[in-house]
Amino acid sequence: MEIKIFNFEPHGDSRGQLIALEENKDIPFDIKRVYYMYDTTPGVARGHHAHKHLEQILICVHGQCKIKLDNGHEIEVVDLNQPNKGLYVANNIWREMFDFSDGAVLMVLASEYYSEDDYIRNYDEFLKFIGGK
Ligand code: T46
Image (cartoon, rainbow, N blue to C red; front, top):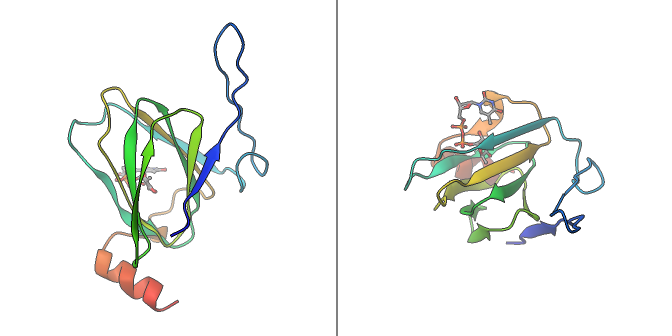
């Protein structure tokens, strides 16, 4: 499976680092929504679903976590461990986020507004959905 990682350019100086992300430049879509998760309970995994249309970029802006991506044929696990590293997650990919470090903040830039209709939350339905494409 092709994994797309973006290495964003920090604007660093003696004060520290700053990263700026612009839609359709640094991020390959219109950014309609931003959300982030924090205070994650130790040991839990989140996600366990796919999206019919949504595209996203995941950035662990503090701490680290792992992302498992499954296209129905192959599984890859990506470490998100730097605030300048963005993982592109396309539609039709089953995803899981796990191994959150203490204090980790996972920020997500999304191409669509929130819509429960876009979720596929059952793995067998996901396999049927991509099989039917
Ligand atoms: C994804 C992964 C990476 C909203 O009301 N608006 C929102 O924009 C989002 C993302 C969630 N919610 C509500 C829906 C649930 O009641 O927040 C609650 C938790 O959402 P969920 O269980 O879907 O969260 P995760 O961490 O399992 O998955 C999230 C995104 O939902 C999903 O699109 O790709 O992060």
